[in-house]
Length: 339
Ligand code: DAH
Image 1: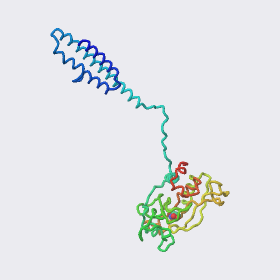
Image 2: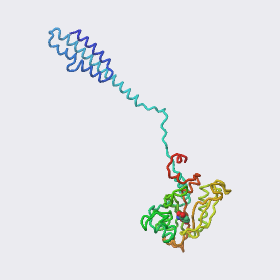
Image 3: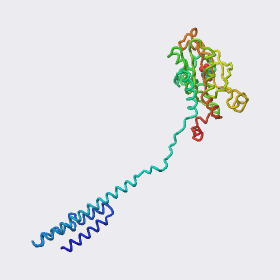
């Protein structure tokens, strides 16, 4: 029995030491110390020994069992440590590795121009207003002195929803809405989307963007209009920019004009950008028509004002030398990444 015990101790210690993982170690424990284990079996034979042998063998058997148990515990600790090391190694973050570059995205060229214009006007004390894209015929036409039968009301140009409701064709209805809600002095710009049933080409789109401007106070004259819009032109295109007012007609202003800026590429000499004119038209403007002031609830005998409307796409096309408006809506990253 003594040899048997010694042999078992050696076999058990070897198998424990050879265990590569916790499962193998558990198998070794079951094999030697489990209920039907080999050491357990010997311990069960103790009863059959003589009274002299029993304490000696008993002590030896206990020593063997204790040694094997201790070896298992020791091995278990080692294997657990090994596992932990492996896990830590697998989860290590190499802080010196180059990071994945996050594409930050780009501001859309139309947003860039829009924000620039907004900043310029906010700097001159203007507020920002908005109006609905689905608009009443009344605000889009009637109140702006565009009477029934006027060519601008043609279904060829306007997306009608019902007879009285439409997609606004201009941001000018914001003038009326603003006057309805505010008393003079008024200084506001209203940027937004407008819609016209134009076929798509390099300079037309059924959806585009305008910025409306309205100033109403006592003693506002054409000189205020000219001064403020000259400031806009200089801030947009440089201090040496000049403007030129050409007579024009808009139903909601009287007198009306179109405003050109001196070509910022050739400075008036003539080039492909300005089609050899030396000047580029950037907006429509005029003194608010008395009938329009009246519709806004403002007495034209006391107050006067000026208004203007500019096309954001047009500004952006000149600003970034883009010759096809469709590029703004295609969402082609090769185009957008350039801004
Ligand atoms: N609403 C005009 C258009 O869409 C632009 C415009 C011209 C607006 C003159 C104005 C203005 O406020 O005074 O063509």
